[in-house]
Length: 290
Image 1: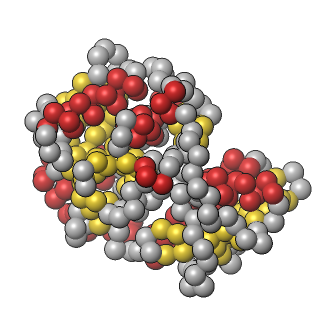
Image 2: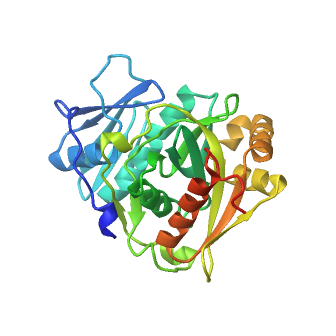
């Protein structure tokens, strides 16, 4: 990983108390219980950007605990056995996200990374292994702010994305050209951000980028609204909840917001291509970058 992405320290003012960690997003709070030091470290690491003092009005409680040769992640209704702590973290993340989805049924959740600058957001979306997280991480190192690296809550009425700052993680060797299947098998490394690098309120979507690995120099190519709408619907994580509303909202977004495919091999060059287009526009969007 390049020096620009070396983790930096952040003030840790909301450590877990008595094995309970209060995690907040979208004006809601979830309490996570963890009985062992390893479990507490895992919870604090995953949610380091989202911890706050307990408020007493949480959506519910989740628990991460050791169970024989594995781990159990549970809620009030059921639990899941995980063979490794890494697998348990993903289960915990999924359950936390589901609680927030249920609490905010007005939002559409997109599989994507989000970065922002000058009051506007760029959504980098696509399937797992396409390099969303590492592109976002490199742009954050160059001065952009962080919204999220895997899931983005989108408000169809305001066309804004909300921050969902679960600790970002990038795949090792992600700067190399790899087949998608190879990329998905790579180990991920977390990145610690400072408070100044975090977005704390919803920002309007100014541009959408669909990254694709491809040999040759990095380049952006403008997409048609129909193609954009289709790709966004493919990355809609809760389409079953919204259906026609999602189709209308994401189609409207595709018509009003410029979108590009980014063809790249090296993620540093890919991130630089997006950043240059953003800067060259002289405004809050990538308009005119094609």
